[in-house]
Length: 296
Image (cartoon, rainbow, N blue to C red):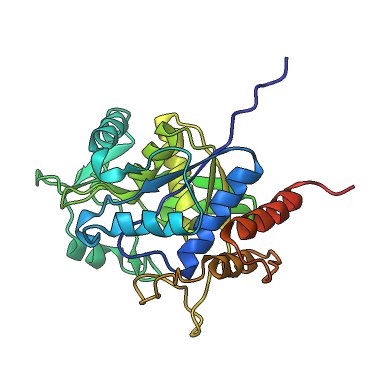
């Protein structure tokens, strides 16, 4: 008896720390195209778990930008800031199963101990408070960490086979921060599972997060979606466009042109004579769908 095919459910999950720029539009457009090309559903999730970095009203700005570009979700958006109970339940499960533990270390202490175990300026936690090390010395827990183990191998639809040794390349990572905020890694895994997401299409800068998320999925007994990481949009200086380096908000005076630009960044060949938003979406979708279909 054939295995039933799970209906496609994709999502775009922006952090409302600033308006959408050219780079984030590419990720949004790719996720929309892939969902539509597969005859699936496309959702929008506002990842405002880091509340202090999210200016009031920026979520509505982003939703307005998407609407102006004709990118409409199939369900009402959800906000991470309203889903803390789900994250706490997942953390409780991880603690009970021995996959998570309390950490008393300060950042200064971790920096002093990590030494050369730092990657791209990020500290790799040396495992000080792991239960078998017994070095919390009765100090109060500041944060909660996930206990990594071994290597995660996975396949990206664009990047191909990927691999990461979690303990040496990442270390035990944070699930709940010392300030009480939920970490992105836990929140995104819980949300994707709870929303039934089957396919994640996002920027290549997030590919390095994927092994951590797969490790969490396995520890929680959750399904692992398919992944597709899209090319990055670079600034003139060669750095990735981002809100942190001042990337300009999308100019919505001419939505079809913005869609053409995003399509070109994704390797499509937009017809710039197309001058309506609906036509620009339809043209890009036809090309994306054709790329998914095997040739003769």
